[in-house]
Amino acid sequence: HSGVGSSLWVDTGEVATSLSARLRRGGVILFPGPTFSPSEEFASYVRLPLGHRAHLTTALPLIAEAVSMANLRSPLVAK
Image (cartoon, rainbow, N blue to C red):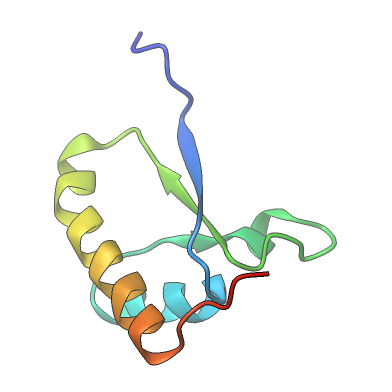
């Protein structure tokens, strides 16, 4: 037992359903937060499963690149 949960919730700073769709086209399946919310909350969050480390090693750089590219196109505004 590793002492960690089975997933990590990550705030991507963008609409997670759009990010998930872009990643899916690249072969990475990542579920957006609204999928897990009956009231469609967590619009900018994705659920990152931690159970498959080999998959994470491949997927994390792709996810980081997708988020980075989105932020370059539409920088976040401090609230």
